[in-house]
Image 1 (tube, protein in one colour):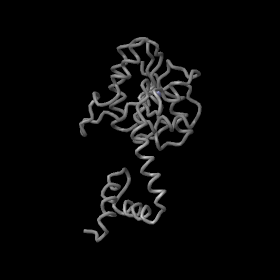
Image 2 (image 1 turned 45 degrees about the vertical axis):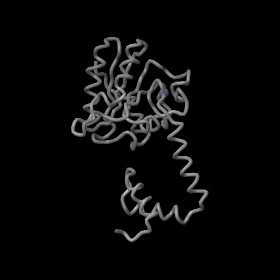
Image 3 (image 1 turned 30 degrees about the horizontal axis):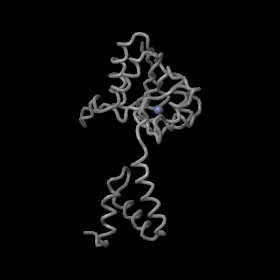
Image 4 (image 1 turned 120 degrees about the horizontal axis):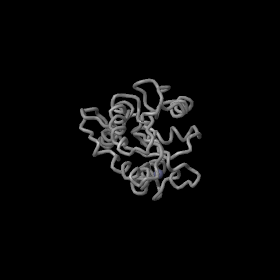
Length: 201
Ligand SMILES: [Zn+2]
């Protein structure tokens, strides 16, 4: 028992479930809300509900989008035959920050992780296969993270895409340190890893 009023404890118990939130940071945030203007608390609550109600998967690349198609997929100037496969929507934003990539994306929403029971069926792999089966894909860049889960996923996808002999497969170069995550890499490192990607077929 922390001795905190039950209303504070209730919020702390929720916040502690957030990524990178421990008990201490959860308490700090709960107290921050308590001291802040009620309008701020209402705005935060509204913004969370708004994103839950209105953000969905882009129907092509599966990234997050407020519309049926995300801004990248609805941009006519993007090279639609070049697909960069990433684990997470945050990887899309990290690569987009560099402003150099002219292709489109496919977001898997995770990586294959047998230990934690994440199997290929739980990722957006069938959707990727359907895009390739449509026949207008010339290259797939495997930009899953250079760590164990990302490598397992890249190997799985490489085998899958090799069934489509007209599709070039490439893997991002290891300008990214092994074990790294794209989301946290700097712009120049991301750019080098995509531009110096290695052919897999
Ligand atoms: Zn999209």
